[in-house]
Image: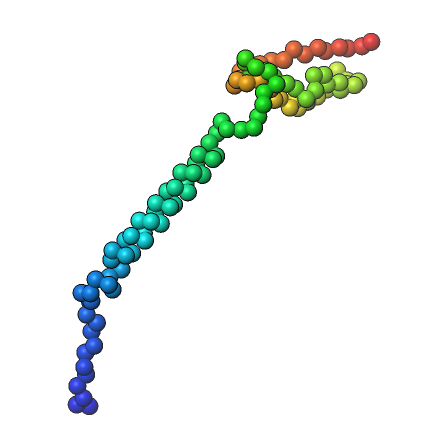
Length: 111
């Protein structure tokens, strides 16, 4: 029981080659960050909005195009609601804005 214990405490190394942030590692980190910056910058240039293969059918302004110009519901009883979905596309070369538009509706009863 009278044994003496030898304390083994690790001492921080003063050797520059064993430091985590030595010149070699800092240089590697700098190269990695530069390469990542170049890759991210190149990706940002490739995926910029506005660079598309879209070729407008009409030049000089916006132009609306509908998949169907007329929707015929056939014989519908009076006061029975009906719904329609219109697919709208802009075939022009400028921005198409649709603001509070109410399309003309022709209601034909009888015949």
